[in-house]
Image 1: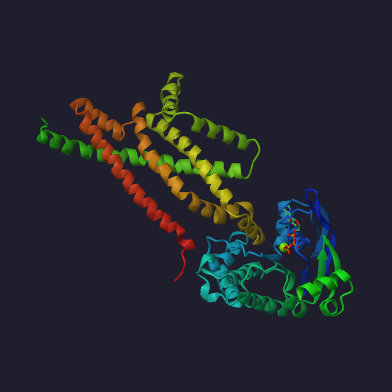
Image 2: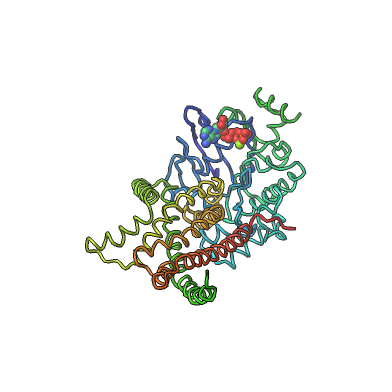
Length: 246
Length: 226
Ligand SMILES: Nc1ncnc2c1ncn2[C@@H]1O[C@H](COP(=O)(O)OP(=O)(O)OP(=O)(O)O)[C@@H](O)[C@H]1O
Ligand SMILES: [Mg+2]
């Protein structure tokens, strides 16, 4: 049975229909890559799933619970978010907090965890993303790649069952992309369930097991990563892959 | 001819009295009022930022009234006016109420602007870390907003130190009132007013140093590590 089952997300901003009925099914341990041209609604899809935007309609089945994506009830939203992590394109680290504090803040405030215990977990997670020696640095003192790795450690802090990544490497200088993708690959190998919006074809091809191609707010084609790249069925998908792989 | 011996004798007598009044009355009056003003300002700014219906209108009304009327008139209403309708408030209490409400009204706008300057992404990251609105506000947004607002808020404090002299008009014995009393006895108005001006200047200069020191301290999170 799928771990996360999403049905019929619709979302408009004013007159613009951005998501036009997206269904998505994710199994435990899946690494789902979402591809698509700019403006196709990839970010909006992730944001609707994690309630950063309120969808116009749509439902979600997760851990024997049914969630309404147009719900605005804080308790329900918090309940869902307790099991998820989110990594933003522009990192969004708390700029007034050190790398370690970025990881521990949620544990200590939302999780009511004692400082000592939170810091122990924080250091372990920073070590995991290779940022232990920068624990006391503020975001402004870190490179983009380092900030994004701290952001991944922060997303891991709540011990999530699924992590959403919105173009985690798009804001990075080319030479810094590898270190972030490396961390993500490690997470994937450890069995973390991940939904990754990306333009990194190498990551989609080699790390993800399921690929989704979106355009104009609908899923145009999806399938097993190998089949998707070797044998795309839709003409638009083929065109997109040709453009991206140039 | 100026009798310098007399000038020096009066200065020796009056300066210590002024400093004492400054340290025991003017500065405490300003600090207590300012702390209250900060609480008012943050509360009002949060109400405005969150667009809480009704209360927000009340806050807007309060800010409008206190920014649109002279502080001296506010003091008279709070002390003599209240007295005349049978409500007795001590002069010091009346002064503290007016100073905190007045400064609070100005600072509320500053704080609100600074909160609005904090990137929405900070909120989103907080929510995704499981935090709720208030937790994000107190741990992430307000500290950042405070940093932005600090220079302007501190200017309000410096203004307030000077404006406490208005309290002399409602019988509060602060630094200026103390000066007035010596002047009333000795008739050396020019010398004494210049002296008290100098003491205010010294206080404000020291506060300006504190301000620069505070700004450096608060910029801890955007200093590059070497
Ligand atoms: N808050 C908003 N208000 C209005 N329009 C929005 C908003 N957020 C997104 N949009 C619009 O929705 C469309 C889809 O945006 P979205 O960010 O989901 O695309 P995307 O697939 O992530 O694109 P990209 O690859 O450029 O990140 C865009 O046309 C965008 O302008
Ligand atoms: Mg996007």
